[in-house]
Length: 583
Image (tube, rainbow, N blue to C red; front, side, top):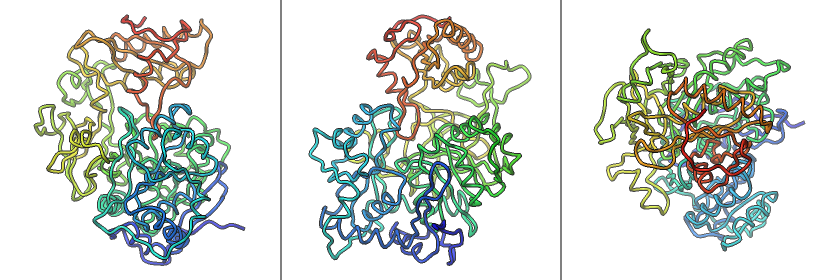
């Protein structure tokens, strides 16, 4: 009977004091630990010890060295499987640069996926793409106009073997991580051995403080930095056993994630807010859980929303989950993964502010007894900057600002990428010659911790106010939670105050009476909550476009809207770009 790999390393923990990924795997291969892969029902499907990973990666690297020149890019379909881990490290040993690619289920349809893959192939100049045989037809069809070879994992294993490996050294490349494309076309973020090992070291030693008893549970996709770095590479660099389930399986059976944690006594896991929210929605009180083992319930990848997290703690507190286990964090692929972590044990450090004041002055002022209820917003502090790194909050003129003054979050340090692969214009726009990265995110300092408030590019400027699209979207979803799905807000037309604020809301009905009721209810909620004129349109499910990491791509939804590609359910025709107030 197949047995899961243990928590006990059998050797002393080395907390990522390595200069390359292969050096880290060499030590992990001496341990008892490794990777376990589970089904949607939390049943063990396969295992891959770190010794097996090491041996199989070297064997595969000997096949890849004759196949491709040093530093050639390999597109690697990032399925949650032993084959992905083996091929990723085979590239490390062969001196090839893997580029983990998203899977078609994430991007809202095959045509959208094919366009994204074509853009990645254009910028990445891949020597080849390696894919599971189940995806070969999709990948080949997407690259019909490219001369990039598409090889199945089995094809790669059949390549003739040579005698040599050529592992990357500490000053060389590691991978290309594609941005999720939430506000633009995906860009290839360069990961170096130094940036990756520096971030792993900071995560392991300082951010999450890995110890001998830690064990991880993960459902995050391997093409996203939080899955690749946080759930695969960091565990290997700390020799920690990790238990995986496929992202698709998680969305179908999210409680299986909690079951894994409970049964395997996992101490660490990570998810965007929506992962915890999905567990609450799917909970039927029909599984016995003990979550008292979980000391790190990390939150990252998107805005940290306190309400769903508090609800998760309320529901699963009866099963041993502690609110103090929550560890909000902030990061992005341009910083490899992590930039800040809340101190373990702190839980949710909330800050409730007067949004009217904030929108007009960029100052985060505490609410008072006189603050109107619809002008209140609660943010969550995302922690302290990692050692050997710096963060500055700068106003829109570039000046560094102080406590509770909002501005652009800028970061510098060894985890920061050198830039975007073969995209000098984008690199110069985000990375300064002296090593500072403009993240494009907005935030402020609160008692030495960073509070993230949104993306600069998503801001809607209206009559001197900074309107956050998330506020509109969350208010709409909260007004009709059982009848509506995703929402997307953006501005169109005009300059300055002449623009129209659009709010698209997916409805789970086509009944015209129910649609009219939803429109009236949501419009009233928006007026009360945000106090700005909004043109609300109800649209069919599946209208939104998501990034490879599961985030809403407002830029691409807006593009689709402007092209007439979204249906107005109440008119049953493509939405018209016209200006009128909601209600």
